[in-house]
Image (cartoon, rainbow, N blue to C red; front, side, top):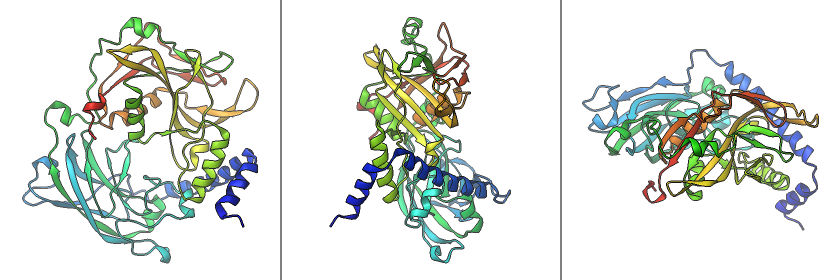
Length: 418
């Protein structure tokens, strides 16, 4: 007798890929309805709201935990998605975070759960949570409040070390609909275990300050194509980011920033998508098309996406190792765009992803997510001699840019924090 997994694998092997996309489309539709309900929540519920904070012998709102002498508490209400702790962390500052208390939702089956949250179920696949694979209702945190701020799990007890300087927020891994119906909250105790680094870089929010990079010369920029191309050599997306580092350092920077490697084939997509669904995980690794630079396909594809909506909307990029080196380390070229929906492929009248035409926004999204890891040692924006400011993708969609290229220099592996 075949096992359940064997049956699923055999079914996956015989299914048409269109059927899988139909399933994902149905999930996406349910997700959209859930998102609409979320955005119709109370207008008095901001994305980040100051919580109740107390600290011994120190008034609240003094800025950095380094100036505080003892543990203090922040109350995180179940009716809020995020709470501003009023704590500005230094780079390398290490905290011990513990929490207690309970939150209840209107659903009787989910009453009175603690900071670890509720075990995920199939229904959670169509909800948008800040930590996609975290517990539903779990205590979570993030450094900064922007769209690129990466949320992390806290639960009942954990340590956290700030990779860069920034404001600490605490929240609940839930939707706005959950928050509108929630009662109770968590009492969170925060202790400073290590005050972190000193110096200007220790307090530079979001990563290092921009500085000139003499090794990135005009001659070097002139040697790099401005655009990538498809298999027919039709020019497409812009090369808008350069990264200096070894292959291991590049991969580590992206994976630390929670970018995921995409699948390289449709068959692996079909299998992984089905199995991740049955294992109650969020599937973010759908493949991207093969494009070319230096007359060869991309070395890596990475994506950032919201669960379920990955079919139509995700941040994604392609990476090529260039033939050049900068101060003895490889130079990598990146073409980054943001998929925001679908449009007609003008090459064959098929369906293709539509990118956000304001592609500089994706360049800065990559800048923020990678710099926030603490693995970027230097960065700058440079303008080549022939900047690209307006063009079309290989599929016919238009885009525009200020022409600048972001350069990120990664920390050497032997100096990176483990």
